[in-house]
Length: 287
Image (cartoon, rainbow, N blue to C red; front, side):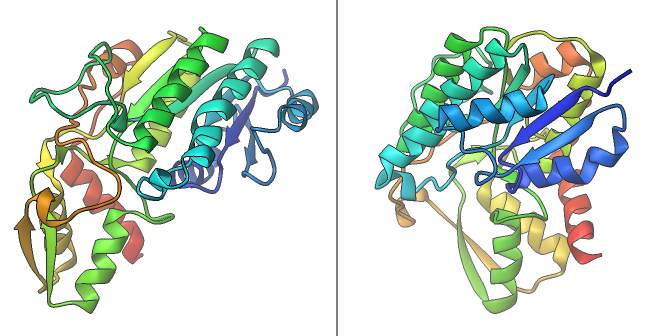
């Protein structure tokens, strides 16, 4: 029997790299990892030729424009990658009977509530990045109602650029750091999200719709930094500051904790504590 083909777009990003790292553990699938250069999703004709060539049974869309602050001045590019290209991909998945998992973000919310966001809470993005990701969600489900969308938050990994690696670098270079303490959420170890996605494929239980995924817990960026400091043995002094003292081009949600009950119960996934998984990532970085 032929192995189902799993197409992973955006394969050079954090999540794409973690999926590559895990692929050997899932020999029942044949993985095709496609970078932005391999598969330019906004070029519909080229993307369709790619689909015709490999005929994927599954597609995991990790491709995204993720430069949150830069998106404020590059809104057309962010819209193309996070919006229109997602609609193109979903249309291809529908046409070629490919089951699509698309990755979205906590930035689709305004951050004004004080309890974890469930999938049916009203959206209201406060940044260009968030608005383009929300448009991607809408186009995804419009073109392919059978798709699964997974919103995630505060993603980090030993691959790529992220808060954990930036903090480790800065703590080596500086005696003191300021980190905001009034933006609340929970981090996501990309390796855990990658594993969760592959477990959904293995389960053969396909339930379309929107889901939330992050590690468990409730912290601020300052709490995150303090734990990184503790796990790395740094002597750097970290000062908690309000967001108002650290202005950025893009506004961030004040509160973006995601309720992961739906994804864990629907697919039988275990949600691991954020601090435990941060330790695993730092151990991998040190090995």
